[in-house]
Image (tube, rainbow, N blue to C red; front, side, top):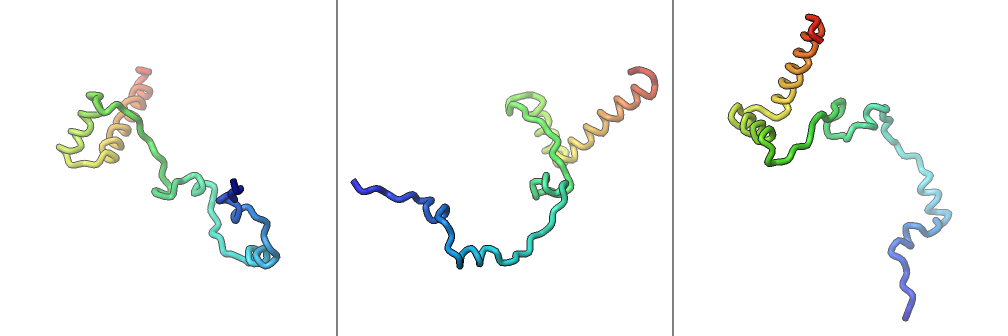
Length: 98
């Protein structure tokens, strides 16, 4: 049986002098900061805050129904819930209940 060549052979083959010179040509590359390097690129300057629930979980179902009935986005509802949660615990600390 004849020996088959690898499909990756052209990619890993040593470069000729002309190919090496072509690869060394100056290419403009954008400079990115460390914060944008961590971003997925879909929402620069933001980070994901969420959780995973079983689709049959009553809390997840109630959340989906609430979003549909109020015609508000999940992001908007979560932002409101988180701000109320933070306010609750900050109030407890301020009034000596913590």
